[in-house]
Length: 145
Image (tube, rainbow, N blue to C red; front, side, top):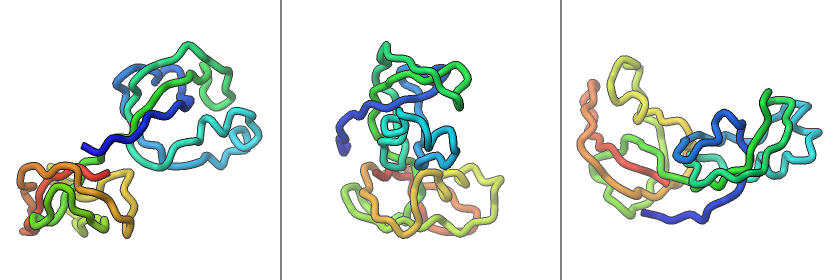
């Protein structure tokens, strides 16, 4: 698995629990966040999926998170996705969400995963089992970073 160094960021106190996973999608455009002196710590992550590895004691008031924010150590983790069955672990893929309109499909969330940008290159960290496709595409479950 690709190791990414840990980072320290701030998260709402109610979510500041070891093992909590979340997506960071980018900088908030809210006026409250733009004026905050701590926004450099809140928004210091690259977009992606993270897991909290440790919770620190430091807490701060926050006008957006009603009970405040807390410092946490996070690690970026791979995102589950459906890829062409020909791809293998260690290969680079340019992500393209599957063009599927069957939201009831059990694999819909990995065919159109949150946190991956269309056209951006990712590394296949791990390839898993075949992802059954109701449209007949030959796909496998994988973890991309």
